[in-house]
Each structure stands twice: as structure tokens, then as C-alpha cells.
Image (cartoon, rainbow, N blue to C red; front, side):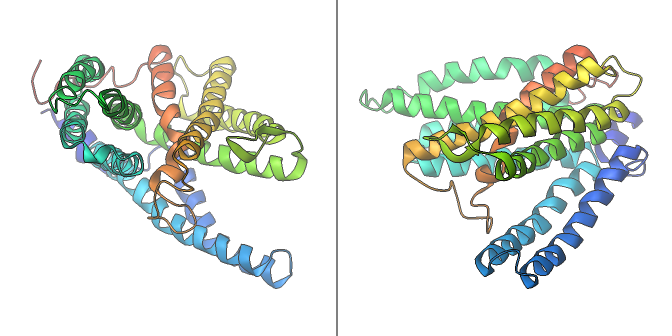
Length: 334
């Protein structure tokens, strides 16, 4: 392992060299400090009800825990970022498996977890060929393993749920971990995370202010067309403004490319939210879990990120490259 690779994986000395990293960390810290005070001020002035106040305070408390858990590993180094993503993949699969009942299929569930570990190995090794080959190879093995119980009834369900869970969490989310193989991964990942979360906020604010026509009333009754369009425009503007600094002097540093990136984040985020809403409606449940007060489960909070992760990764990789200047296969030595 070269000194440069070791520093990228474990070094934190240059964590705040990029101004966008500094700005986002400072902004998140300030928001976490101000949010509870703002809620209390609104409650005392009669702008919100006691029930709304309690709900907002619960959500603020959850974010006070979630934000450091997400931001600190990204700042500390690539290795901690990869570990964070791997843990998020496994916990998301656990919620999905429990909600759908596929956890009862021990062979399928075990293989999915093994595939997650293999995906993480490819990420840490910076072995792109293995990383992109694993999905098809895993589907082949899942198809075989799903035969082994010798129960034709239910084959399609256990196989399909295993593949779906693996792709959504093991494949899609792991792209965020692979992104950490890039020298300037910190501002890029923080931009994606902030843009995805603010995309949800923009949709809520535009929807509450101008929303009339429902976007998908049977899937998510509270979402409106105005909210979706307002979030789209606001997120694109945000990505263009911040992306110009994050991707300065790269092939991605054009208004057109940044508009497309912002559009991918906004559309992908909203579709990811609707996708999980469809899953929950199909299962007849309100939340995928209860680990986060005011939010439900991890999937209820990070559903918008699932489709955004691979879409943004490959777009940025095609245009500007991700990790192309870093040493590949640092473990296997290819």
C-alpha cells in the first residue's frame, strides 16, 4: 500500500482543505443547533400546535444523532466512509428482510449478506472490474441457492426479494462507498447527501405553499405536483451553485453537466421516496422500522438516496472520472 493510498484511507489531516467541505459541515452544525430553538419559538408564538412541536423536536433530535454519524466518517477518511456505507447496506437489508418476511429464508438472507461483504471488499480494494461484475454473479448464485430448499412454491418470491434487496442496498448504496476511492470524495459525497435531503425539504415547502394537484395520490397522498416541480428547480440551482466549486476545473464543471447532475439527484430522490412508499403500501405498513424517532426506520429516512447513489456515481464517473488517478486493487495487487 502506497503512502498516498494509506493517507486517503486513514488520513484526516487534509479533511478540511476543500471550502465546500468546510461550508457544509459548518452549515449542518449551525442548523442542528438552531432547529430546536426555532421550533420552540414557533410553538410559543402559536405558529405550530403542541403535537407539531413534539414531532419536530423528535425529528430534530434524530438528526442531531444522524448527522454526525453520516458526516464524521466521511471527514475522517475513505476507510471509515466505506465502513459507514457497508453498515448502512446491512441495516437497510435487515429492515427490508424483516418487513417482507424474506429473513425466514436463511440461505437467501445469508447469501445476500455474503454478497454485501464481497461488494465491500471490491470497494476497499478499489477493484472496479470485480465491483461491476458482482451483481450479475450474485444473481446467478441466488438463483441456484433459491432452488436448494426444494420448495417450488415460493421460489419466485424468495429469489426475487433476495435479488431486489441485494440490488437496492448492496449494489446501489455501495456506490457511495466506492466513491471514496476518489481523492476529492469528501465534498462530492457531502454535496450529494445534502442535495438529496434538501430535495425532500424543498418538495415539502413548495408542496405546502403551492400544492393543489396530487402527484401520486394512491402511492403517497401528501406529495403534490407543485412540490415535485419546485424541488426539481431548487435542487438544480443548489447543485449548480455548489457543484461549480466541488468539480472546479474538471470536465463536469459546465452549467449543462451540473444541471443534469442536479436533475438526476432531484428526480432520483423523489422516485426513490415513491418507490419505498409503494413497497410499504404493498406490504400494508406505515414505516419500515422504528429505530429513528419521528422518522421510522433507516429506509424511511434514506429511501431518497437509494436510486441517486448509482445514478450520480456513474454520471460523474463517465464525465469526469472517479478514482482514476488512485492506485487500483490495493489488496489483490492487480
